[in-house]
Amino acid sequence: MSETTRSIAPQRSSTPRPLPDHVRVAVIGAGFGGLGAAIRLRQEGHDDFVVLEKGDDVGGTWWWNTYPGAQCDIPSVLYSFSFAPKPDWSRLYPLQEELQSYLHECVERFGVGDHLHLRTEMLDAAWDENSQVWRIETSRGSLTASVLVAATGPFSEASIPDLPGIDTFQGEAFHSMHWRHDLDLEGKRIGVIGTGASAVQFIPQLQPLADRLTVFQRTATWILPHPDRPVPPRAQRLFARWGAPQRAMRLGWELVQEAMVPGFVWWPPLQKGLELTARWHLRRQVADRDLRAQLRPGYAVGCKRPTFSNSYYPALASENVTVTGSGIDRVTTHGIVTADGTLHELDVIVYGTGFRITGNSGFARLRGRDGRTLAEHWAGGEPRTDLGTAVTGFPNMLMLLGPNSVTYTSQVVTIEAQVEYLLETLRVLDQHDLASLEVTTSAQASFVEWISRGLARSVWNTGGCASYYLSPTGFNFTFWPGFARGFKRRMQRVELADHAVVEARAVPGALSPTATRATVERLAHR
Image 1 (spheres, rainbow, N blue to C red):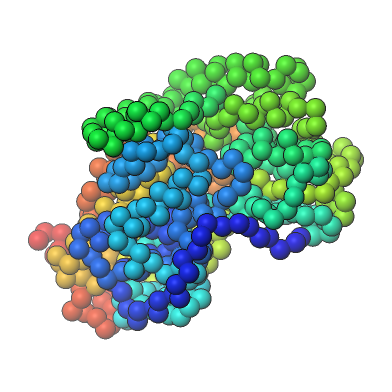
Image 2 (cartoon, rainbow, N blue to C red):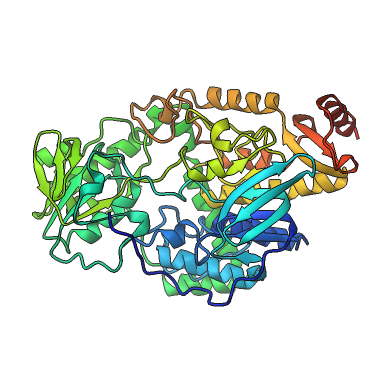
């Protein structure tokens, strides 16, 4: 497989600043999560922090994923910070370029650029129990931090399928996350593996270029009509002059998104209207009955991530496109052989196969109090947390967009709530003169049990599909079992009784478990 290259946004050309020896807070990742944390930290008077980003620029998902047609599937007014509205969004659903530009604007507007360390990859982070700090090794040196914030998100590492012969292919091959903008795809025989959210967006862009486009579909995807449209200039002027209309629009979209929660979480039959809409959309756009049958999923709407597009079905119905549902047997030097024995000769293979959610290599770089990595704690593909934010065994570490923190509004809504939890954690540490907080095993177990009960009847658990939302044993480690406002409410308070603590005066040298429990009881009654 050839080395992947890509075109990128203009890089910050200044020589990276030296890393400090120690900071109060180290944030890993400079996407929406990392930048949201940086902005709110600075707004609350916390200047002793860094944001470490392995990429050449800010943006996270919206810097790495530059494939043609990359677009957010959440309305722009909701997929943006509540404290940083943008009145001049060009579209109802923003494109990748505009989202990254928005994050650049936020960096400049809130003055967090001096805290950014780009091209700085976190290689290892280990909790030092004696010193009560995180010891962090990066590609540019080392530092320590009192608090670690993992803000890399669930879509930070491409998933390449383990196919026999994958390394023997003599053409070009790349994942959509690492799009080869240097390749001329005009007139090529292109194979696309996967039909998830990214593929639904880039397949219509490839179809007009390809001599022959072959789509290898394992499972069909429910496609809904896309309500995207340009934002009229007069609406932009209105939003710029008066903030209230845009705030009302944001609230309206939040209510629209939340209206889907009862059907997704508690009573899936309520989603029948969405299924009827998706079936109508398929019939309207695909005339061929055989192809229509091939593209009709056999599971409930919402069991896998529903996708919006007005161009995906027409692209698949084009004369130069073949959709095959026969499984892939192997990759050869000249193409892909499917389970029915057919050789599909190809010049280019594009992997639209999503991301490593549970097997992310970053989990193996985080080592907790007992020396075990997060990957070892989560062995078996079952990530478990407390409130989707803290993990037993990892003191003073918080995750943004961690397991079971996904609400059905916007990831940015989730991020903002978790950042407030981070700020509350810092207040608790200061107020009680604590060196560290660590969620107890019992508190985490209670949360996991509550999650399991709350999602037992959800469409993700009962909808009849296999998805990355569930572990191999069927545990749903992805969603919050309710409304976003409930999640935000839970994020407003750090329950001391649910944490083991170490008082600052006890450092160096950690407290014994007995002393720690006594400390919790004393602090809980202050």
